[in-house]
Image 1 (cartoon, rainbow, N blue to C red):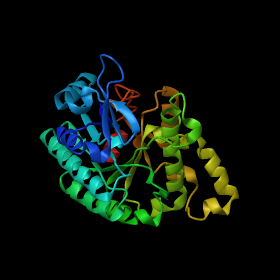
Image 2: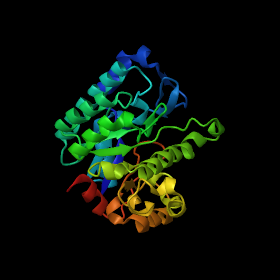
Image 3: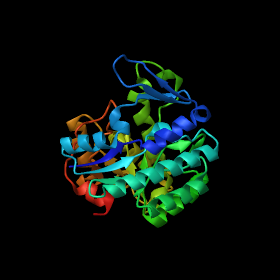
Image 4: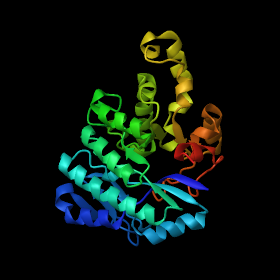
Length: 312
C-alpha cells in the first residue's frame, strides 16, 4: 500500500516557528481539554497539532501499522506563508525543504518528499524547486494560486518552466475558501477546500497550459475537487463555445486524464466513478494523514497510479 497525500512537520520547522513566533503571528491554543493544542498562523486555518504531525517515530509507526509501505510526504498548507514578505516565505521554505530532504533520505525505502516553494515570488520558487529536487525531493506542494493570480497567469511561468524541465510533481493543494457565504458549519473546509481545487484545475485544463508544459506531473488533492464529476458540462461548453475550445487540442475529458488524482474522497462509489473516468493509472492512493478528515488507511484501487506518478 502507498500514500501520496500525507503531511509532516519536522522539528527544525517547529523550532523556526517558535523562534519567529511574532513575525508569523503564531499562536498555540488549548481549545479542547485533554487534546493537543491548536496551532494558528496569522489568524488562519487552525489545526490540532497532533503528535503524528511532529513526532517522526510516531508518524512512521502509524504508517507501518496501517500497512503503508511508502509515503510521499508534504509540508502542511498552513505553513505555505504566501501572504508574508518574500524573505519570510523563503526562509521557512529552506528550513522545511532541507529538513524533509534529510528525513526522507534516512528512510528512503519508506519515504519520498515534496518541497514547499515561494509561490509569492515565482522566480524564487523556481530556484527553490531546483534546489529541493537536487536534494532528492520529487517536486513541490503548492496552493491553487496567490492573491489575485491564477496558476495559469504569466506571473507563474518561471515555476512552470522549471517544473517542466525537471519533470517535477506539482501537488496542488487547496487553501480554505474566503467566500463570506461559507463562514459557518465548517463550510470553508467541507465545501470551500474542494471548490478551490475545482476552480484551479478547471482553469488549468481549459488554458492550454497542459500542452505547453507536458512534462509536469500535476497531482490534484481530494479527488480533484468537484471537477471530475462535472466534466460533461465542460465537454458541452467545448462543443458550443469558442471561448472554451480555442486553447484546446481535444475535448476536456481527454485533458482530465492528464492529471493525477488522490483517493481522498471517503465514498467508494465516487472513487470508482473517478477511476472509470480517468483510468487506474491516474488515480493514486492518498489519505491526508494526520488531519481530522483523513481517509485512513488510504484507499488503493491499484498501484498503477503510484507507479506512473513516481516514475517507478
